[in-house]
Image (tube, rainbow, N blue to C red):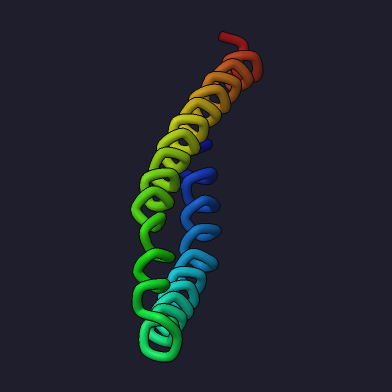
Length: 91
């Protein structure tokens, strides 16, 4: 039950802001890149987007670390929850 409560709250938190942020970031990035490419300098735009794969890799790395930390926190919460249930039930 403890996992379900935490998971539901996590999904609601991520889904609400995550979808809005993804759409906003995608539209902003597309408009910015198109403006840079067609209005400013094409070569400068291509140089400016070179670090993007590294940013993607870094984000993925941090995401994996956060996932591991969340799993560890949930396991610790589950252990604590089990100990409390055992104490209350008298086993």
